[in-house]
Image (cartoon, rainbow, N blue to C red; front, side, top):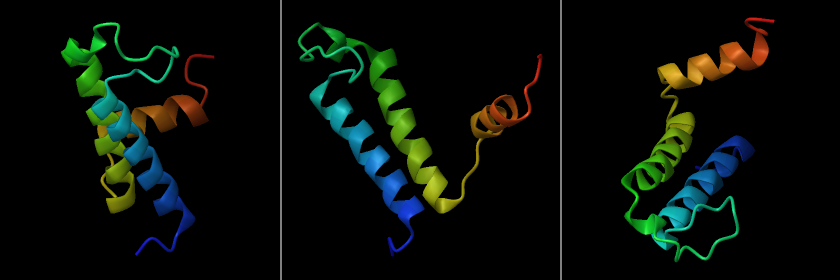
Length: 79
């Protein structure tokens, strides 16, 4: 069930990433998606990776990238 607000936030982020994938727009520069980036596999793969990561946060799957994000965000490594 989606009773926890955290689950709702992650599901909404997943849905947004999938919608950007489906539309073929990057969502970061205001383009209509007609700039040819629909054919860019790296951009499409990134959109799907974001969606997968958001679902993983609901199910409890934590990947190496998530651990590194936490370390660099919370522990001021290299400062």
